[in-house]
Length: 209
Image (cartoon, rainbow, N blue to C red; front, side, top):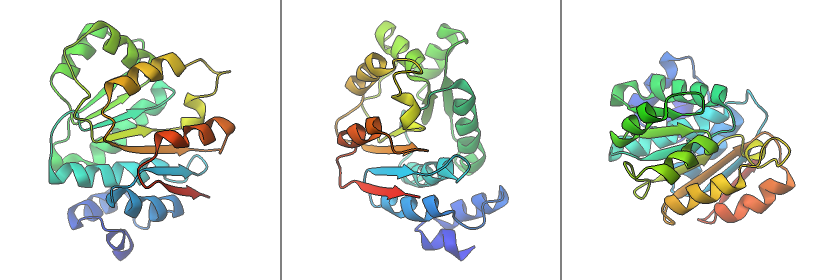
């Protein structure tokens, strides 16, 4: 149990991780959590199932607990399924904080989502297309105080073959503050990901499995 604590995580968070079965940090967690807690941008490449999600959820929750406000963290992910999985990790690990999250994906009612966003959840987990739709059509919420921008499965977000997220991402990047922490996680190191390194320019920490 000391291992998670050795990464700089608070005792309450170490205990919460233990309760959901996270006892020892995986390599991506051991490498990236301290860097995120130091305020650095981070790029982590590791296979699916390596614990990438907790590698950003845990440090984001710790920083959030020190100064809770909304909207604190935005996570962009390529699919609805991933969005719900990430939201679930935030919920179970952030339970002691009474964490409020909002999942913004296609196929659900825009008006209900806009209402949820206007209530300033701590964490927004979104697919880029739907979030960009909200930013284009509504001014009921702001991302200008955002502390963390997380791109999960970043390689898939930018793969042109899958669907072209680039215009949507441009809309989103214009809406978030320049002064923020950017965390990129991906299963593979693609050319697109190399180009993305410019997004993570604040003393970037780079880790590859």
